[in-house]
Image (cartoon, rainbow, N blue to C red; front, side, top):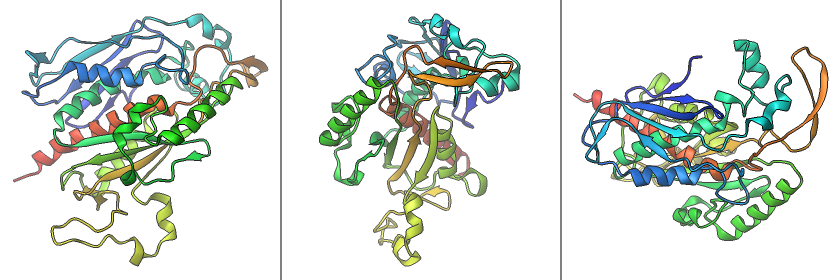
Length: 354
């Protein structure tokens, strides 16, 4: 199976399955001499871990990271950083009923067709549990990116949409509630809605908005390796993501060119930021902001019709512990993937300077 690595110079390779002994990764290319606070890494993992509130999966995993290499006396050595997170609360029997059948809108069928074999216990490698390893690597990338601030937050759950611009919000307030929405009134509505959806045995999707501040001018490579293209790839590699838009996004098609253009200030900054901080595939020093759309979790605790390996129609039901809405736990994952892209392109930018 290919496709287990992400990045060029700042590169992470992840390993492990949802119900295996452990998940983890190797981060290669992190420069030497970076002071690393492991408490900050664990803090981001705690934001992603299951069982943290009433509106997420109740799988109880401590998600404690163990770092095996690449760090000495609190600083990176420049060698590969190896780490692991041990699985402690697997309930593989919850998946015995789907051993010979396929869950709709999961990777079950395509894995079986492509590889001739699949790990049906929680989806194995296709499980979103793999993203915990990305959070570790992203937390390290954040500490490498000194001065750059990355804030992600939930801006929509179902039809409940935050209408305020991120410029009107205290983005740090997103951590003050279990939904991770920086508007407390909207967060309360979203929380009640997710609880109602969960009670019905169903799921709902949502949108995460991410803002990267203080990004220097010059990150990104023209033509095929544009900064926004790599951010799009990073976000679309996250489980359950169905859409990515940056800057004005799809709303930009309703504007005229004279309205959409971002006029310059004398210092090179722009009066507006419809470009979303990226022009010609290269960061222009303005805030980078984008939206990431997540579909409803495919496992619903309701009866449904599907097919087995022989193509026979069967009726089964979702079991196990699942998120009724994935976006609250996906916030640190979006931040992590953003940090990995920016760290990688920071190193690429250094190699291009004369």
